[in-house]
Image (cartoon, rainbow, N blue to C red; front, side, top):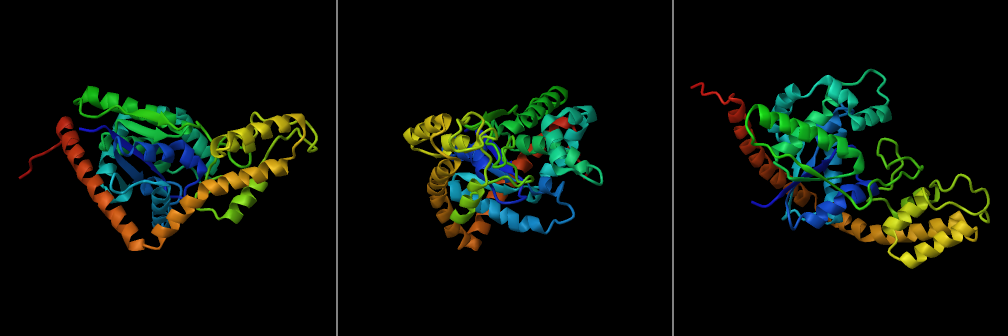
Length: 333
């Protein structure tokens, strides 16, 4: 049986460049080698959008467009909608007995996301259980490998702990997954923040127009110690140069810009203009493919439905094994 990948995103908005370098790039690269399932985690998106659930349907469609635009092949990778696989909820409930509240409170990814969302009416229980839900997502598809960004590593370790405890208590039927990081561990936000984040709004989206890309790049933070274009500047830790390193294929140009920036012979405007061109060249084919699929909404819906059908069939098979292992597969008739 081929090795399997499970990865996914919460459909809170379209996807951005941070998603691309964090996991999308690996998903596309590995879909020929692995049996790939990509989960659109709309139930998890409800944990901090429960007052406006109507937004999720449109976002499921938009996120699927992003997948197809970057090169996810629906003949090789199955796109699955989380809420349409009720077995995931069942497994999440079983896993809740294998995790303590103290463990969740120590999870650094969860702590950071709580901080970003600034819950004013208290933290919903659904949000606290987010790491458990993610563990169910990964294990129900028996994934060997999970392409993630660096910030998600504690979630994968949480999953591994749950799997070990389940296999020890009941029967060794679940797979302990491994994380796969992208080539860039974490892409900083345009505001110089630690990472690009939808909730903070410091993103460049895959579907952004050339005008939007220009606007976002020209407003990017650079070296805060540099007052004048003739001042020597710092390249290390400068978000604009981080993006050049990742997305500008002309490495000679990048090195020249770095050298002149350190000497104070090039201004931020020129460095950003070169980045605008590099990002525009990178995003143009993605934007074109996105438009092609957007013009065929019925095809996109068929891709989602077929992927979800295949995903649920696998989930049902795993849950049958789980109930047997836990000795709760009752014969009531």
